[in-house]
Length: 296
Ligand SMILES: NC(=O)c1ccc[n+]([C@@H]2O[C@H](COP(=O)([O-])OP(=O)(O)OC[C@H]3O[C@@H](n4cnc5c(N)ncnc54)[C@H](O)[C@@H]3O)[C@@H](O)[C@H]2O)c1
Image (tube, rainbow, N blue to C red; front, side, top):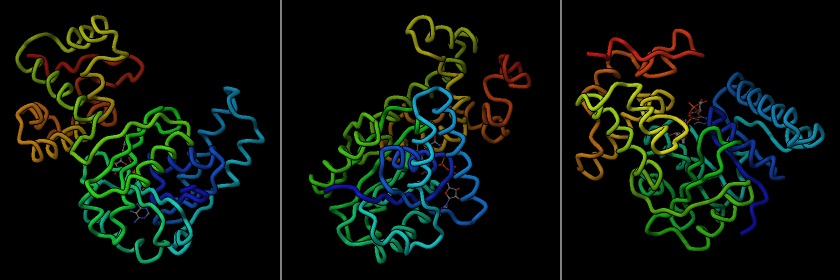
């Protein structure tokens, strides 16, 4: 199926990027938010991101104008009726997502494909809110969407192979490398990454090394661009904690269980870079220092 028009629901961090890459790939894209203010904010960040590509020389000023011209802001779901693909990127809340998909299902043409960008919720469970199970899948993009090359295409046990193929093809069309996975909590990337992030916290708790030595171990010993405790701070301790809880509930395996220190950091509001303190103290953001409160 050729994707001639895309709909993106939610124009926050992820939705704005998802809309941007669709429009950059030449596809007319309609984007929904819950208020004019949030639409303006989302379109503002798209404009800013496109300008950076122009500055770097990877996009011409004319291409930027054309890309913006393909993006249509919307508040009414009726504007999505003739979309071939609708990608949902609203808050990570199952009830809110199911409610939205049920509503969309009544409005959007039946042959269109629905996709969710969820990081941790079940695609299958969302699918049950619609009558288009064979045309329901996950398209899990990575942050920041315009820069990150990966998209996980998630199939359920009932996704039609033709819809899966369309998902993979769409990923390629918007300049990503798609990988195919099935609907299990964490898909591929978080299934491997989350236990590693949790283990780095356990290593600290057990006294395997200092914050800096654990990070330097993985940076210099494995050539990772950043250490795991720094990465925990980047992602947000609360976000990883929430995803780990969902994965632990799904698999009931110890390696997905959030360590006690992590839970306490979340309760205390030490959420990483965004709150100014996590495994590092970001009082001077350009020169983070290990958080002395965590050092025994
Ligand atoms: N942030 C990440 O790094 C990341 C990475 C991959 C996937 N995700 C997933 O992407 C989704 C969105 O995450 P985000 O970080 O962009 O969140 P965000 O809070 O930045 O954006 C969500 C936006 O959705 C809007 N919204 C809520 N209900 C809506 C509705 N009914 N219609 C239209 N808009 C609505 C909100 O106003 C908000 O602006 C979540 O499911 C998240 O798990 C996030």
